[in-house]
Image 1 (cartoon, rainbow, N blue to C red):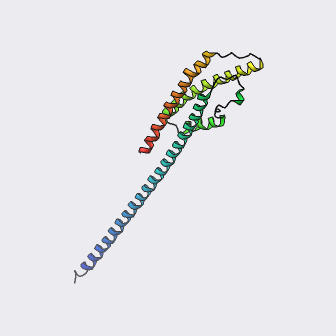
Image 2 (image 1 turned 135 degrees about the horizontal axis):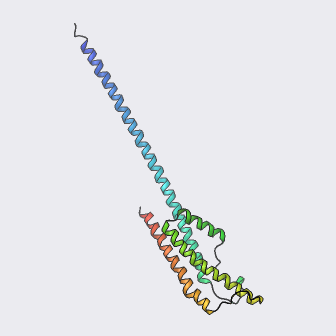
Image 3 (image 1 turned 45 degrees about the horizontal axis):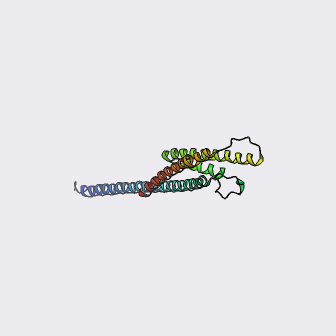
Length: 189
């Protein structure tokens, strides 16, 4: 009889050990499943955030391109005229609020390359806009006889036609190409 107790005790110890091992393995499995679920959720959140950012970038770039094209149309239609400028059929320059919005979008979402090209393009547009202001003032002075502004000559118009307009168009083309390349890169990812 002295050894009769060994069998039941060993059986109890083994079954308790097995139960403990099963519980430990089960907890490890649950922990791994929870960790995997957290990682999947984090990945899904990152992907959704990246998708939103890419969508905003695309929207910002499309708005910038539309804006640049409207400015380009205005630059292309700028013509010397002795007629009343208010009655002109030329495209109008985008307003200050729209200019500020597009600048904010470029500053917020634009890549360094797009920001640099946008600066070059805007500098070209500002040169044309400054000439337009001076030309309109000259035309107004001619109508009113004030004569406070420099009278623009054929040379000024040639400069506008053969240097400033091509410079604006080239800067706009480079900006458009860069944006297109970046958006194509987003689409390829």
